[in-house]
Image (tube, rainbow, N blue to C red; front, top):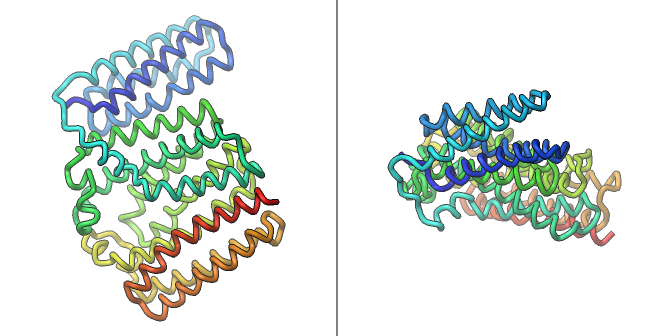
Length: 393
């Protein structure tokens, strides 16, 4: 089986990155050389991951390239450093050439690849990231910085979502028509192609953000990506009904990414934005889980309504909503936000709490659906209120 275009492009990027590292090292660029060399690491790591999971013939040369690259970074003797870098480039070239061998597999349609990125979910994540930038900057950041950060964050979110499609393909087939028709679960996009796509987007996100924005922003986007894929999807989702409580940290990372892009650091006020999304996630997701409880049960996923029942789930929704509303009002007490935000937080939070309480009293699909859809609007409008409050003041 021949790797698809996404892995071939990633392998070429790794070879190009190591080549640039060799050239910049020979030219004696100092700090510039170290920065350029670091940008070769994400595609190298992505190729190793794909080789380990799917393409074992690529494993030896890709791991060799990565080890040689690491040794070159660790060795300070000029001649040996350059020699190891050159060997790493040679090994990465072998990997790039090897991706051209084998029998091709169907690639899938462009529409299916767009679906893999979960664009509707990504839209909300990008909005919280953008508002995080505005709040962190204390106003409107430069347009070029916004564009690059949103692109990098979008690549990270899309890459994580594509990898989620691969890992969840088996349970997607068991959870009803909505998930059964997803590209990987339905077989329209082969799992190897989706895996390559996800790894390629993730690596591209890190390179773009580290090179153009700053390394902290790139690391935060990568951390959110890995937490969603490895911690939530791979470990927690099928193991505990608290999966979404802990896993919600992944969806709370975009505001930190935006803040770090605007300021170059993550301070305590930035963690307030993280906390808002973190506390919002359980009541939002449990409302959806109530709607598709039977689907989760059929797939053996221990979501709270399946394991603890609807009564306990609605109780937890109310408790988390109370905590969320209180938490969103608190920043006004120490002056982080002003009157515009306070009015929005009280009004939006009152609506959220009212719907949660109605669901607690009347556990019907209509109530759960209303709360779920309102929660999406709630988070979007609350973050817009944060940004407006910052700009107006």
